[in-house]
Length: 354
Image (tube, rainbow, N blue to C red; front, side, top):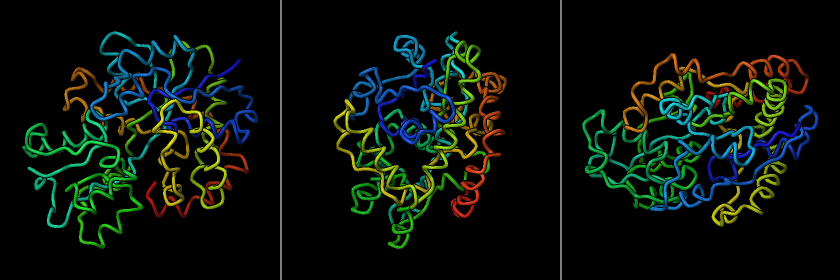
């Protein structure tokens, strides 16, 4: 049986680990006949990547698209989506494991700004409004009495809000605060900028699983062995993609090949991921996420008004079904390959905190 893996958003990177599984032979070695969807099949996902473009909301569309286009697993769905669907009466989407388990950035502010409370009236960089970063900002600002709609200035766009680019306009004085990819933070601190919030440090030990891997309940019930094989291959890819510099050339080759035929011109033109970001990839080494981490993000989304406050911890326990990822980890962790990977990555984990 063929397994079709696709992305629920527009970024090529969201399916890069699956494409690597295919290119490196991990899927074949685990007995998986996989087909990878190179970009979001719903064009609204591409339009939404543009500031002021039509916002693509996964709620109400993920299940429809999975059925219409035969997608079995999506690795990159917003963590709130299955719960929002459930609140609307659709109880079909299940979280089967982790994808982005760490928000590997730090909120950095210009010299002289030493707390989030001092952001009133300031310019904050954000990629696009309504995203996960937006909801985190709004939650934090409301908690200290700042109206995020009227009392801050939003600088919207890829260069202002993408973690890998946001340090540039911040350094140039075009923004007063932005979430910056952690490898670039020390350089800013040396120049007098201030660290306001470290996502990795402040979300220990549960991480920040803000994007998750999902499948439909009916598919899980019919194909448990196939899903377990998917996770065995994916865990191997998660390890592979964090081992630098040894694996960097192959990972870069995979990313370049994946972007070549992407229907989004911005994805084709974007700079490839630099080696400095490779070890800090957010993939969970055991393929799993923290239920408590999920709950903390849902609380932010409730506060932002994009998720019903009727969602309970019991809903989380019902929706998060990663038993097959756990079984896959129990098996693959005993292989010589994974044992070597973990030994190689132990200093990285100790240094980065995950």
